Length: 106
Length: 196
Image (cartoon, rainbow over all chains, first blue to last red):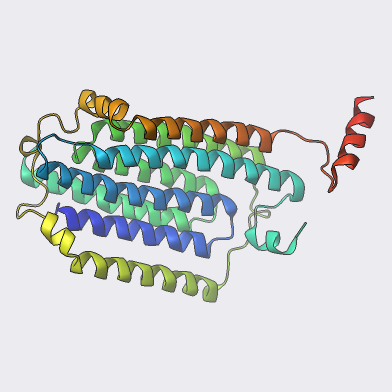
């Protein structure tokens, strides 16, 4: 079972679990965690594709892995910004409920 | 690693990562979600190492399971949500909608993967072959670093600027501020008053 399709199916499954988390949860923290989950799912697919691509070239290129490293950097920046926004929201309105935030505008 | 052992390890890693990510999105308390997320990150790091991406596996452990999760736990501890302040999750209709959308996405992705000519073409008969069959330099940290700093230097620089912007933005947003008001002059006056 350890083949490229298996990796891609795993990636798709993790990605859709992440989508469920983003849509179903009202806790901002868990929504941010689900975003990380989706980024990780994409990383698995990227590394898998890169691994297979390395078979077809003789130079042993690392394009997929470098792309994954870039995604890692984006995830780190996103987590830092997202969590500081969350802190700001908590200080101002004492809530981490996305539903409440829809009502409190301005 | 022999073939069947690799398959077994991959099966275990995949199963545990799917289970723990499911627990991440279903637990009510964010602390449990964060802890299951650590398990999931560790499993993904294991998958990276199976795919000869040793450096990325360690980066995954350091950056995700280390830095990002510490950040999450710090924020959870800081806001310290008690059971009464935790948002009550949506009813069954909301959950059913979310489950429907995610199942739809999964079905579409699965359809795409199983019908993709590219995937069929890329898939060699024996699955992803063992380490010996790829060029010896693939996955070696030395070769990876050389490629990153020569061919993909621009990507590296862009990533570093992105992280710098992220740091500055996070510090600025999370800084303790005087009560913000809509127009700037007001807040300036307030600042003067508080300074005096």
